[in-house]
Length: 265
Image 1 (cartoon, rainbow, N blue to C red):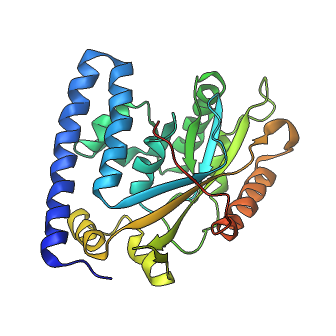
Image 2: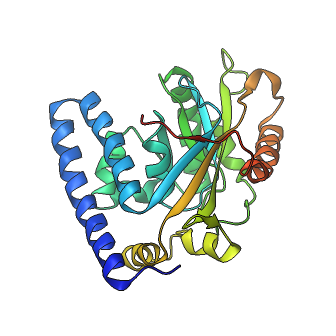
């Protein structure tokens, strides 16, 4: 059901106002302390998801220690969805650090930026392996290397798995995380609805947000699968294949009755 123009316009205005106000609140919180800033950022992320008409649900239990989340990438909302509910540092392309407002917040949230060039990327991922082992919380990697169409799970970029520390000290856990659009306005999401929700890099911000506001309320499922220990993995290619297989099967569990709504972080 398409929302009325006045309703959609009010939601879009609230969302854009929330983006600006949220940045000011986060910036002020970081002036007080890093811990206060990070907690405030997670609250702002959750609030923006509600303003955008996203209802978030989860299955499974995310871990909260040194390691790596590996997720599929449906839209830029994934950062708000995951960053608002789990303690994590993102792995992102260097260009994000130069974006107005978003880039400065990303840096404050300990985002690790990687380059597009192969030589620089391999050097950066080697440094990231050490960060993953010693961090107090997991990093998060979008293994497809780009945002998808909301329907298909793209092939993983194997080079990104150079970030996984194999045979370097104590083993760490890698947890696959699947994000899926399950419903639109209470009805099971069609392929078209999933594609309309997906937000890829070539789509402008305001037109995409306007489209979401017109469409209504999306239910987003976040599936935290069983973590895989690097102790049981022989090489990074095998790990990438195991993760892709688990995540490609994830959507089949969406409509089972043991559903739980995501708690506040």
